[in-house]
Length: 252
Image 1 (cartoon, rainbow, N blue to C red):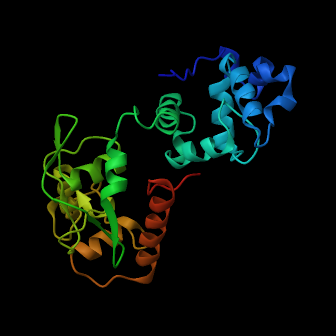
Image 2 (cartoon, rainbow, N blue to C red):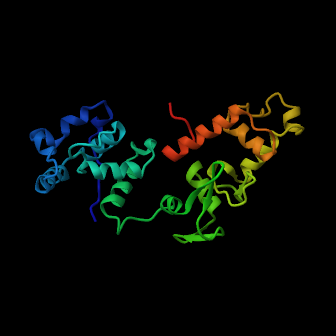
Image 3 (tube, rainbow, N blue to C red):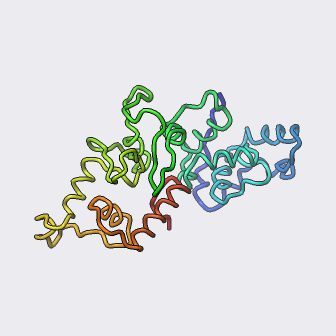
């Protein structure tokens, strides 16, 4: 298997100084072979010896330069395939990029991930919910047991849940990451409900989320309250970000 290395000189941490180390400087035209297979193979051989191929690929992913030329030893279609497997905030993560490259170039030997399983099984339901194809009970993945809700939580939050992951919306089959919570999140949500001592007594207690946020939207759903337009808009925006990037967190 080709081990795609992210090893680059330390000077690459500063602006675009990495361009000084690019081997393609000697023959830049060779990096634009069009559809000529022999030219593509030649360009990739040049890149195989380049110490900055990883940072060049990361730069292409970050700037969206995925339509022309060979960058980071990948042709445009391969770079687009790599980009589709990553969230934008992963473009600077050499390990994540390496895994995506291996999955694109060597699909038969690439390690299967929970993200792959999620993309295969999760599907849209009416009203902004997500269902799960197949058994909704625990399944075994790489020697560990996961429920669909646990997978949703882990992929969205980026860390293992505390205790049992349960849905927070009224749709029984829903596994949407925004509609599940672990023991800690449910406890935190309970402390913000009206009448709780932690809220009533509190100078430093946690306040209820204001309307116009996804937290407020989830509270309305959980308590079967009227959902105002601002909360609906916030939830729709979060779902749109999730569909586009795999994360509900706004960037910038």
